[in-house]
Image (cartoon, rainbow, N blue to C red):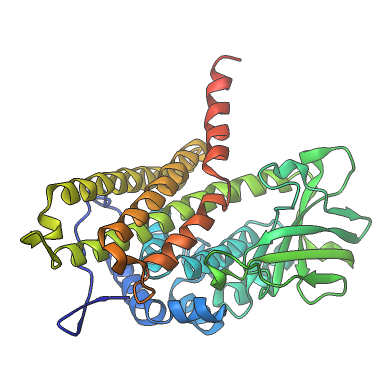
Length: 393
């Protein structure tokens, strides 16, 4: 929300960022995303959070322009670039992290569907996923197999699927579930496949949405499967190919998380700067105090560095180059920059920064979820550390 001055709303003043790509991005598309976020997300986000509701109508509306963004045009998507996708995600996240997370996870469910070799499955599911008529969700994480994706115990025995998944974003509202499961005991990642499950099928039970610090729009919950009958048509990725698919999806997802962090941090600093630029203390504005200026400068530097790395990583995706390591670096620095920067923005506004008429408290809480989504910073260190170990093994 906006700060008020003389009884009138005072919008944050956008500042130019040196880390914007110098070329190769669609400025018109970013402008559309900015307008959409302002008109359809920003003014409703706090109420969604208070009501713990999922705005399916806004997801469908967003899908008209941005649905299937990274899916090829020949399959009905937009055929957009990674750079433009990140620009869109940043603009959405400036308004609300939780809505953006829900929309992006739904988008990625469609993206991996588009990569399935099962043409009949693609033809059946993609149109509704791209349009937002049906909501998609991933079922990978389990209570005892979070960061260790190879340790999942959900299993397909014959044609029956059984197991329990945790932390399923949009799980409480999804229509289509992409479930990663093992097909052969003791074979680990070599037997992982991915299977499509109708969320209303017999044997599927969805728990109540989690009671979280913030981010309830994302409708995160547990989903259990008890002897759910599947047909061959439900196979999205055959056994032995599911693990590589999951890891590739995580690389894309981690870069999306970085964009959410960077977008939310950008708006938080804009909001705090607008406030500090007009609040008087000790005969000058808050922003004229050197200590305050230097703190803002530090967080702006972190934002610039995070965005530069994010867009550098996007170029790797666009060139079909390996991006696992770069995505890990990008998520790690973005998580840290957003957490520290959002906290500072609230402090820079004093007690006013804690009031719910601003979005800082809601966004700071949701940013904590992003630490754990698609791998914590500590897991990013594992990914980075393994790349070092391989140099000397």
